[in-house]
Image (cartoon, rainbow, N blue to C red; front, side, top):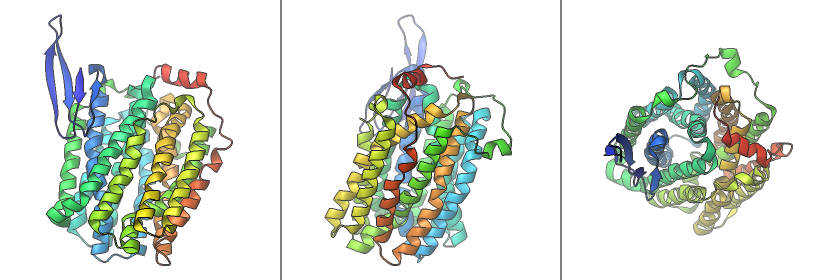
Length: 433
């Protein structure tokens, strides 16, 4: 058996079985978590280790990038344009990359995302030109979106029978790492300045890339060798009807979420309440942890009504986001803010993942999943622009509008047919095509 314990140490070990056969296992260090990993789950172990380190870097980046833009005098409106352009480019590119992974394998696509994330961190402090910063943000979004499209697919293909539980725990681990990065972002900035901080984040991503690229076993890839689709087929909207409903819901959700979860999120607490970078770093770190920890226990929702879980949790999440913008003080606002993921995203994320995998087609799973994600990601084009415009009126306005749209994003799911328990069991039992 291999096991992981922390976040920075990964090594292969050999042991002898009772028959004298030498077996290679993997020992990986992760944050505050001990998981026993069978040797047959080699790729899953690699995926978890790479994701944990990736989350640590991305968490710190998400805190410091808006502060860097503010530090060099970039206006809220220009910040909105930078974030929106990145979302537009990646919404198009992610479909192509994930669709190509159905035929060329997942490894190169997943690795490409990590490489672009490292480039993004290296580019940020080297220029104050808006086009360069927009490119850096685009690379950062590529790192996240490419991985998000493929993360669930990889887990489904290699751990189908325990997908819900493993997916929830793996995302929880990644968010735990992101929260850790956000918690220490202020300390990193104080110690290294903007230049050293972003370079450090880039080096962490290179470490994540090394673990994944060297350790991931491409020969076990179930989809490797399938025919590559043309551009028309790649970008057509020919996905199953239920996936279209999920995509429309995701589109509305991302418009709402990206109106508050962007450059304005850390600046809201600073501008409205006078919070320091260190205090905001703590708030955003707790924000990520409030999502990470419940995910470790939400993998048991498989046998409940997934559609109802998504709709009700979106209503709560949206309500809490809006109230955050109306709360009178830092403590009250932060307290309400931290509940929106505990009773919101921690429930709908695994529920939505199961429904998407249920309705995605085995032969083109990467393409189907990426199209849902890409349609949803289009909303991230509009949210930052809305935040840039409305924040000049009131720093609270983006949060109020964000919550209203998030709460309404479950409406398209009302006609969605809930899979029966038999269908859910069959989904996780059948072998990949």
